[in-house]
Length: 519
Image 1 (cartoon, one colour):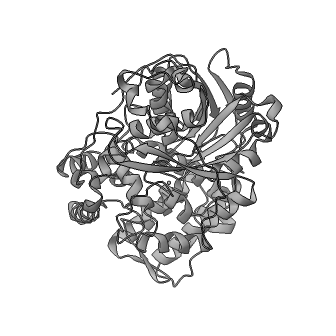
Image 2 (tube, rainbow, N blue to C red):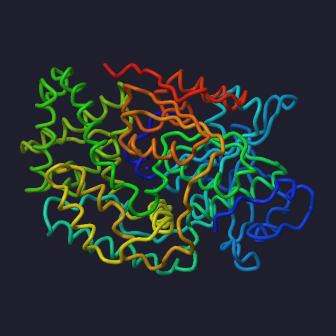
């Protein structure tokens, strides 16, 4: 997949039942128990159309150019009340290119939470033609994102990502901003309780049945791994081959999902700093890893004293860690060079020089300071707040940040209060979180140095899915490792993914792959 800018990464960048027999969906038998809510939606007929909806629909145009077809599937807003209000879920499909060898439908979810996924059908076809030959590739905009009855609170800023800064005064400023953002969502109160992974997993099963598939295969990245795990828990008999890339700790989903990220981000920053030190002659950030890291912290302190002037924008201690967060997680040579060029500009500004921002820095700062357009931030927060309970008092967030200032001075004030709007959210989750604990087979892949879904959480997912196997890339500090999701794929990982999806063969044991770091 092509490299994405900081702005794009930020705009795109967390009732348990065993399910009845899948034959119910195709036999016409009347389901009972928790699945009664799916009786009417799952019997609907899908009407496929062109994907482009108008002159400004870039994603629709790209889907049409790739030969995809698009549709909307009707699902209950509340799956426990099938006769109540409904919402639309937008999907795309690329039919298997080798229909004689077709083995089913493969749904792709890129994570987020809340990233639209319709465009990923052609992206997966380009990255893995062998999979496209055997599977109908299904992209989905999860409920309330993209073209799926979108939630848009029209926030006055492009994204809620902000660090709470170095002191209580900075925290109170961001808490007030979070309260204001939550207040903008009051008009969406009817939708917000139903934005959870549990609801979206049920939507996936409606899509499966409407497609006429007895089982569903799945490729999910990041938050999409939690969504996939919830489906495995709710509908184990309807899951075919599931691949989870860069797994989220299933017990951490909801408002606290970002809390463990600080140490992993610091480790990824250190790895990048070693690269930057080897290129000191180009970027002048320091000739050793320690000196590069000292430069980063000096920029942060300077931004806290007086916001840095970057073109028409200002970078303060609330924004600087966000720039690092968005950039870390891609560890290719070009990715490292892009971050180094951005920090070269910021370092010059911290020294008092008049600077011209790089293109990626300009785009990212413009996004963070502009009003929300498509509701991406609103939807991500709606999903996060619906996935689990949150303290209704911002005090615990502050105490958590303050307790980790010594060991997480740069990233703790960001990650430990990242989802602060949930403290003020105008709606509570409709259901409790799903407890993930089953032995359904699945393949989990990820990087040992992943800064966004730390490895300890990936291992927690492996333990929760006791029938799974895990493939770990050592020497990699990237978030997302399979070919469709990353610009630096690993052949060992993709080999394991393809063997499982095409042949149904899981590794006999958990295994490791090696990686060649950026030079």
